[in-house]
Length: 83
View (cartoon, helix red, strand yellow):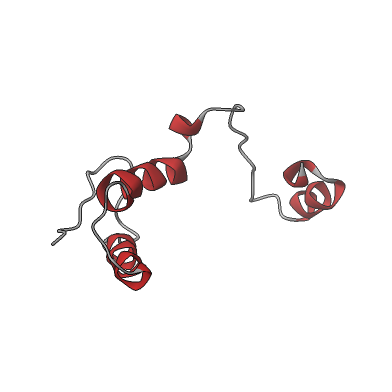
């Protein structure tokens, strides 16, 4: 894969403060972004009542904007009030 290519290995050798941590294949429960997508789907996109795509996108934007750099996705329940 791209993360194990020679170019990446060379870059990592020049930047020793960075370390890649590889997750086991097919383990979405370990991947924080997968937790975010799951929460987004459960909260916003599953069974939504939006007539237009722009409405759905507004809900998604509000959902994503509700996070700050201090919050830990997956440790807090995320929600957006829907009409």
